[in-house]
Length: 194
Image 1: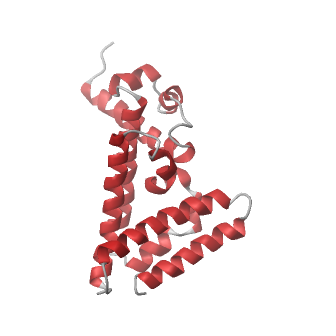
Image 2: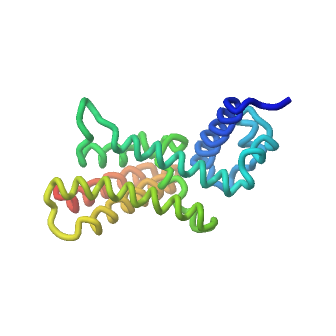
């Protein structure tokens, strides 16, 4: 039975959304195509009807996650854009750290990306550039002295690393995990002129 174009588009979107969530939760190598298909309510054969490989799906899933993360960072709050302080507080919160499935795709996939192909690395690079650009606009608005692009990139990478490191130690040393978030928040705030 042939699937309509509309249903095919829905199936593709379900695969991308499911893969994005599962890849953030368990890493790209930690999830198989059969599991992704099943979690999306489809077969792994349906997955290969939409994507030539798991890597192609990973690239699309990463892009999807990055779009969601960017939209959250730039979404209006109470009729205005979020302040730099609000962005830092939100990103470095315990709630965001603990919600891996819905968290930042950059933080969740940082260690995976270096082992994958250039297409996926390019998507990650674009997402990192967009994140840094958000911070650069805030630094410019605050008239922070020095190389604003360099500082914005340092802030973006510090936040990603803080979430990754905090998650890594959370089970063994929850107090250290929280200390990491607080230390990076305070230090990044100083860089940003807060």
